[in-house]
Picture (cartoon, rainbow, N blue to C red):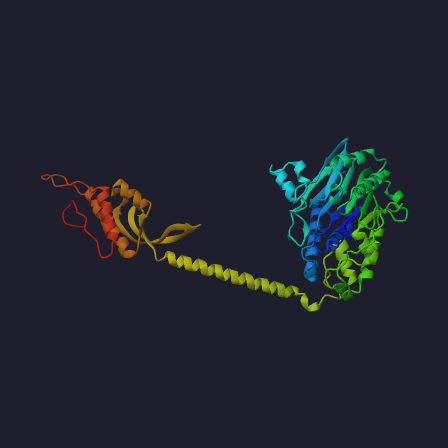
Length: 507
């Protein structure tokens, strides 16, 4: 009752139902909702290429990309966005995709429940236990959205779920304009007490408008029915029915109202579009694209091929021919992208031939890139190997103390060291402590340092192997501490102190 234009859009067919609420606080809210809904209507068919939940998620992400293109070509639409709550039927299962604060309710087996979860600031506070549900209605930031489709996130996070469906169950999709006036208990009472889904929709919209309607209100009521008993064709005698391959289908009723079109539903079963601003770009953009009538006619032809109801900004856009425009493409290719999401044809007349890279050139570029990467990798490996050959260590070779050039590690089957010198010192002749050290390798700064370590180990070995003279007191073996001091002294520059040799002399 207070909005100057309707930012809501909705579509309901035999297999698809979508409600989108454009962000009315931003320019282009009607453009966002209309573009998104019209971009999803081609899913209203039973022969999907993949699981319904996967297809629905992919198509909504693609619709989000189109909104980003819209903002790129028309910066005045910066900040626009829309909520989306969509249901896609596939056999006896229904996929639900949701983002924003529009809602999905279900009445099944006598149980009425809200299926979707609002992506709002107050709902987050409720989930965190910082706010009571009854306090949410009076919270000053209750309308702040945390997740939406549009010029906000390149890859929005959708809530996705799949449900088993049965004939007779009812679903209700709505924009937040309904919840702004009616409580869930009121919605449940109307849905349970209405004679049919037409009556339910009209009653809910009328009650909302009577309550003041501070926002646009869009309501779609869906009933799951056996395909053989689908009554949708009877509600749309002027349209050709879409083929049914078995399973289930949905009967539907939808309505959308704004300030100047309060409850103006037509008796034929589809809602009349409200008057007011169309879901289109500014006139300057329309002047650059004289193909709007052609584009709108193509979309009308696609819509006419199946029973459906289209309301709100999306309906007004198709009726006026002011379809949201993304780029300077021809009308035919833009309509094909919107309705079928087909890739651009390489041979299209409006695609410059020089922009296509020949296959041979692409292969040549790939070969060059791979060759450069291989050369860089080889250079890195060679530099690394050259560095290892500047290192030395003392270790064991054939049970002899030896000097190695390189590092003790291996690179797979490749050894990164080789024996430079082999001494005559048996490793077994060393004290247990030094025998362990040699087996684990003793690093050296350079070749001279490695030779000093070997000399110290030779003195250690002789202290054990050479017996003391019989007329003198046996000389004790150097302790590990003494040997460690000796090795540290050998490591110091210009210093190679001798270790006492128990066999006489100095080593």
